[in-house]
Amino acid sequence: MPSAGKRKRKKSSGKKSALDSALDQVTDESLAASKKEFQDLLAQAKVDTSELIRQNAQELEERLVLLKKRKIDKEDFDFFVENQKRDLRVFVDSQPAQSQERAEKLTLHVLEIAARVAIALI
Amino acid sequence: MNSNTAKNFAFRNLFLCVAAIAITSCGTATFTKTGSDAQIESLRNFELAFIDEFAVPGKRFNAAAFDAKVNQGNAKFQQAIADEKFTARRPVLVDLKGQFDADATHLRSKASRGKVTPGLATEMKKDVNKIYDHALGR
Image 1 (cartoon, rainbow over the protein chains, first blue to last red):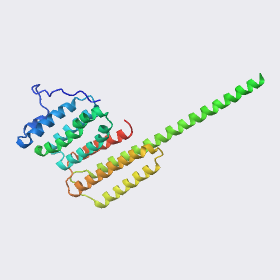
Image 2 (tube, rainbow over the protein chains, first blue to last red):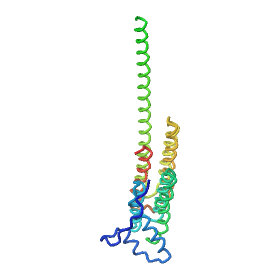
Image 3 (cartoon, rainbow over the protein chains, first blue to last red):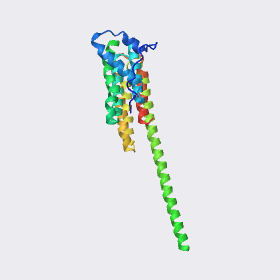
Image 4 (cartoon, rainbow over the protein chains, first blue to last red):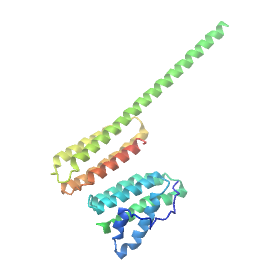
């Protein structure tokens, strides 16, 4: 059951991840709320007790960094997001009712926000 | 006494027969499951090779070769689905076929426009390996 939950991101622990550094450069005000929500949810997902949620967050982060570095483009990124969603829908549906909302928020919802935030990284 | 001995003998033989049938059927199931796993591994290798062949940045797109490979893949998946003895595994093979279709569509779109990016093949292969590992219960 995903429950590791409400651990906050460390803001002053020294090194920032490549993704955090990239996101810091996003100054678009219209994306500020999405960016904040995305960073909070991704941080929660990365320390979740469920391996699949952690793995999904890790992959998403890596692909955003690849996008920023132009190793993949937005079309590729969207394609991989769809792959991840397809894979995760089964996982979310298989969770007990009380865990489904959280599992969905930390997987499918994060992927949806990522697709919005990704535009600003290009 | 003799009748008891005969009964015991008959029971023993019956027990041995049942045990032999059980062991043989387990063996058959394991063998068939192994065959099914091998089929899935063969599909995985086909798909990985397909990505390696066409997700190459800067490579000229050969539509005929691409279509031939996709047709070969479709035939392989359809054969695997038809041959699958475990009915519970058929939806898994259908999901794998769905991934192959999605990969082929994306790859065609990118390669035909000369838009294959340097990271595409590696990331596609990661997703392929993940879905096949899940299909094999790993």
